[in-house]
Image (tube, rainbow, N blue to C red):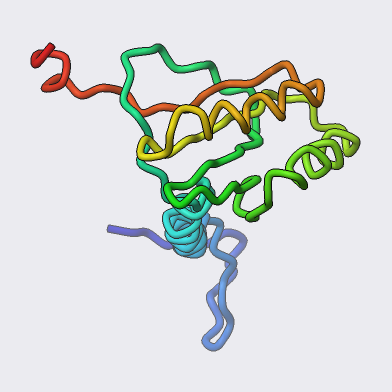
Length: 150
């Protein structure tokens, strides 16, 4: 239901369009849907890409302090800094180079549970001996079925 109110005797001339004072939300919805799709695709890619079977524990998670630096000991013994494989001798120089770039956050060590405790502790010892004191070990949380079994 609409009404056309004319003032001062003005008439609508055929072929001329009037200004519509409404907000068109269609472009906004289109942009938001595109952003949603982009973030849905990109979010899983932001996690550390090395597949490791982490040990299970009932420890409480550490509060997130920003972008973590992750050192991973994979099942085959390969050591990774983030997603880049490194050997044990170049691990400390790589971490020191990152530290000189202004990185002062905690270093997280992820060790595959099939690796020996000594292999993970060897990496942790090297990092600690280099002067990095904010070191954390990453584990998965236990499921309820594991808690009941104990």
